[in-house]
Image (cartoon, rainbow, N blue to C red; front, side):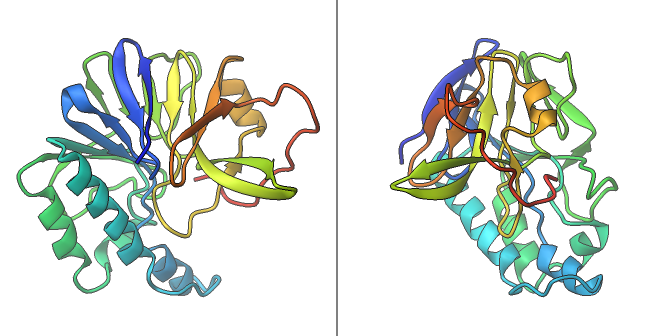
Length: 234
């Protein structure tokens, strides 16, 4: 695993290839937009039918990161469930897996736009949370600094070997970090979307996820602008 290390307001952070953020000094693991129960929610509302394995896949990835980093605290930056009904209709065994992950550590659920209400699981439920110099919330707020958020599911589009590929990514500048969606089956918002362009400084980087975390300039220095990606961005 090759993470990308950087600092935000003096806090040394690591962007992990999985899309999680780790703050080793605080023993803190951060994930965003798990969207547990997305397949169930789409089926319930008559949308596209997806294989009902997204929750299991997402929890497997989360279990792996918790085993790797052994955090004292986990912060979920909102949209942890695809809606409130999905939180009450988790697949068999999913709640037990979550409870095992939560055991022995502090767990903070930040409210998102998909899951604004409390869930039945334990943990601390907050609109936002502050630890040291950093503030954790679901949606980035213009003008804020030392902010870590999610919501937009940023994705970078680039050419590789003559092929166009899209990769979930972190966005980071001197003021904030926006995390990619950690959940399976999540769409994304292109890094050149106006809302992201307005939030991020000119020095912003996109840290691609995958087998390793790869930092690139958020805005290409030359060449045509990437075409928008399909997805709801949160």
